[in-house]
Length: 141
Length: 486
Image (cartoon, rainbow over all chains, first blue to last red):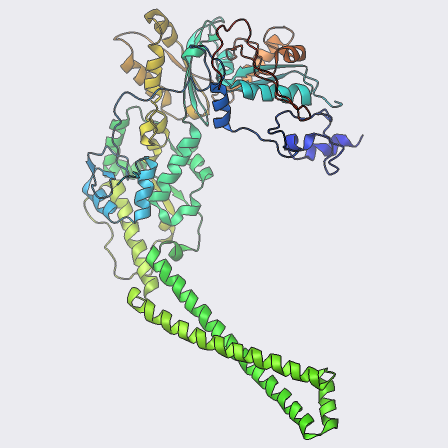
């Protein structure tokens, strides 16, 4: 039985190759798998053997929400932590120290005069980078 | 094993795993791998099981922080109380990405060298969690503390110093210079080609004249030399060549006109086009180098003088990253997600929220056994921080106890091994193949370290050959009222 040793070197993309091992002549059947397995997660009536649509997390959650949950049942989306009740503390974008001041031109926070001079000298892409880090980029200006 | 996996499998899944995911997994295990029995569990609960001190079943509050997310799980009498657990979508991955962006913005010249794996190295070895964040930051304000505690990371040498520190205008200038050089090259090539073609054309015309003059012998000899058969072929070749000569002349004229236009246009845009462009970028690098120690240390006096052109600067230092407050900022996001812009609450607040959903006696019981596990909990100083947060939120002079897992990264596996060894021959907790076939892929047998099973049947995915979808959704008698379905 030659399938034993060399099959261990197969790639791990089992699902797409596992079905109908006899048809795929380039794939050696793995010894621990049932060679007649056809995965049922195939989307679309017209989808062929290769077009397996796997759902991503958003789709999975969307279809989970549609199921008949009771009010107190735990589910993946039920256990998300609630938003914070306390106001967020402000830290400087450059150095992380507690920031009392904000630059009106670029909306970056700073805590010392030297930081302010540094901010004024930054190119615009670095400024937007810092704001994006804080998710403070505003579409409406 | 011939076409199957012979032994039972213990597998971890997410807390409150979606039924669809479990169905897919069960299908894979039972149908494709022919596993005899399977057990699903939650990794942090296995870790809790491994670290149990007193008799089992016990209660406690499990806080597990992994690579992707952080869970707060209250465990009552050995069973997970699933309706009160909470998940924060921040973990080691988000901390590494945050640190990477911080350093990339601070050192834009080293954009490509600041990789995620280096960030993880920094997090594992050089970061810690401050017991009191604000106080720790105040300590970092003083320059001596900074000098003593700043960590430097040396990046490998790269030769693209100057190219990466150019501003966008200077980059444009470089591009235009290269364009001009290309154009000149093309023009030169065209002229050479024109010359060659012209010479060839002259030679052919001369041979044609031979024919007209009537010197047939020489004409034929020349034809043979050229590998041509007849006069008509010669004529057609002459025509083609003269055409291409014309075209080349046209192109040269056009190119000259373009170059003139370019030169005229670019002059007002780039007044500083001069060979000192390279030294100017060096100056920029100098000034950036100078400002960084300034702002990190917060010193009022200037360290290095703003240079006139100094072509030599400290190459080694240019390739170093200085890690100051970043050491505590990056792991802090799991306590203060607002640092990263997330609006979820941090660990401390979520713990308080979870505890408040219980009556006071149960709160006291839970708080006696706070258990920390998970790879993201291995920062030095984390246990002290959690104790301080608990001290702030619990009533005055009440007691609590915080334990850290004996090996936070691997304990889930040890716990699963313990459980499997103990329950191997027993029936409870295992989903056999028969169960799978009767009750569907999303069935879960509850045990001490598993999720809570909510008995909702999913329609079995229609196999490829079947046409119709499974009719409707079967509800077990447990869940009562039929809800509207999307």
